[in-house]
Length: 359
Image (cartoon, rainbow, N blue to C red; front, side, top):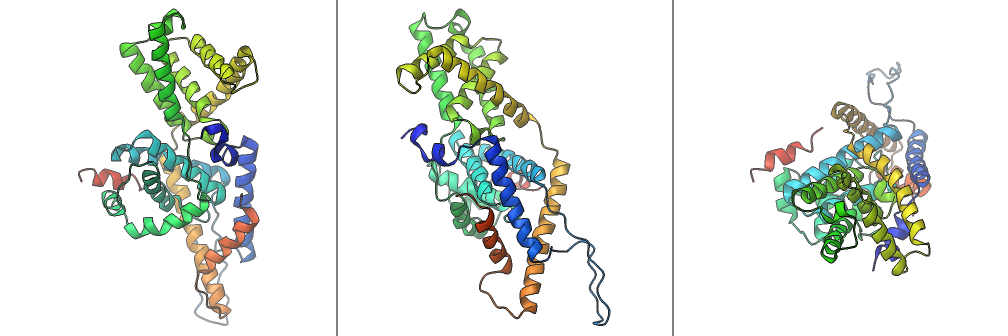
């Protein structure tokens, strides 16, 4: 199987407009249910001890906006990359984990499930899927986290992914392109002089810069919009530019190969033009991914998100208790289940690792 015939291509690639619509619908679906249940109130609430005197109106908890949710998820995706590096996981595990997080939050909203819980399970699951398995006990011990919390969240994450665990990421494509470049250099007469002489320290720097470019792209929507091969090629172009090497002759080779293999009905010149057009858009995602998320702002968003979760649970529990209802599942779970139908789409390192979870 390749990317073009994969479930990732069919189910997990969208236009920017489609992504915005999916998220907005999910976000609003949850808010609509909360509103129907009477918007939860937490901050500034005062309880009355006298049944004859009504309690003062509580200050409503303002949930994070869509933009704030995006900032929070970008921050946590960066945390995931850091943790995967600390564990020594290969790039394919890091990329799969981040993709799992992105896919999950197309099905659900952070208003329903805290990213801190989901990200740990996403990493653990990615390790299993990508054959870099580490036992839950050891994984959680190093992170100083509850093993049961990670394992109990796994069914939810699998459901959010629609049990689709196949991922194609830019890292493997990037390795393939650099291997192809070295083969071209051995053949001779294929590349222009600058690329032909891209070796040694300069090649190492170009590889590192390209890898950093992919890391930045993985923090954005780019993996949900572009094929991994295009992201890798754009990152390689960026890496070569860091060492002041033009990329044109290699890009022409890639286009020629695509035409010969029948992967495109376009001419070689048209393929090159299409790729250059894609690069311009990918570069904008790369610039976005390179920008750091303000940690202080994330803390504020995180506090509001937790207040919203707490208030929603408390309000729902109170209402069901007043109505004399007894349910095996929490009222909040039932509330979010209804929202799902309305808005869903189809050792020494112990301390540093644990600290990375704290905002």
